[in-house]
Amino acid sequence: MTAPEDEAAAARRRDRRLAMARAFADNVPHNHALGIVIEAMGDATARFRLPYAAKLIGNPETGVLHGGAITALLDACAGAAVFAALPQLQPIATLDLRIDYLRPAEPGRDVWAEATCHHMSKNVAFVRALAFHADGETPIATAAGTFMIATKLGTVAPRGGGA
Amino acid sequence: MTILGHILAARAAGEPGRLLAAIPYAQFLGMSASLDSGELVTTMRYAPHLIGNPALPALHGGTLGALLESAAVFSLLWAAETAVLPKTITITVDYLRSAGPKDTHARGIVTRLGRRVAAVRVEAWQDDRAHLCATATAHFLIKREG
Picture 1 (cartoon, one colour):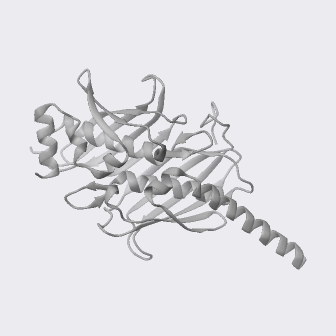
Picture 2 (tube, rainbow over the protein chains, first blue to last red):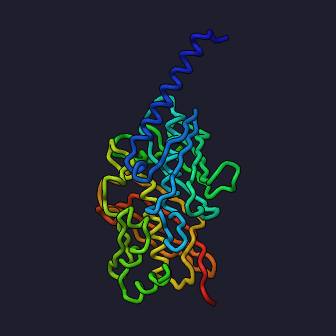
Picture 3 (cartoon, helix red, strand yellow):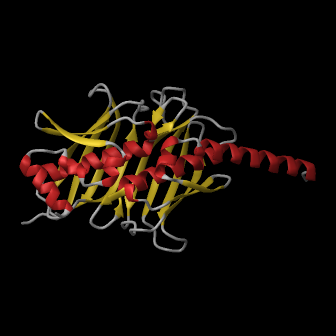
């Protein structure tokens, strides 16, 4: 059985780690340019919101957001979920990201993204993510991505780097 | 004029740059299109707001994904007769190396053109066309006559 002070210390470490991960995700210029709001960070999860904005429109006739804006939101949110899952902060880099567009985002409505880092090996983190308008509603897009962990400055994937 | 009208006019005039003028998100990312030996090349001009990793610095993966997706759409619109704007069904982006704070170019190769679905492979590079920073494959819903 763990002593209460150990549990308290573990909780403090966890809070510090998540605060660092949030600060890291918040320090991304393009996230700010998009207007992304970090709503929540969990142990291996992140929840972001992309407020609807005219500059992100892909089709001016309908006012529907460009797919690229959804891609950027899912990529950013997936990366944050990896940061949240890492025992200590390390540089990461997206290796690949697949996005399935289920339906267009509705004009005028914010888009949320939720990502979970569901597996972490020595070199690679595996993430699933979802973009949606509101809880319980049918999703806009799903994503699956892999991230290299502990990338050196200036490199993305180590040569011959597999899982 | 409808967006598809703009696109058809740009193609008729041989001015690919006009493809992007009507798309707010393309303006936000600083995208332009030009012809290189008859091939359509989409360029994302570097700007500080495109950065994802300030420590390296490196472009945000999302901006590269958006560039690849846009380049695929533009090459499809440029190459093919479609009665509607292509809708992305799925896109898979492979990040090959980090993209530095400079202009990024992309070209799409239409690998299959059906009546309802088109497949496009896309390549992105910065200084050297042989030194790709990202690639993608994407499927689009289209509508072709006949």
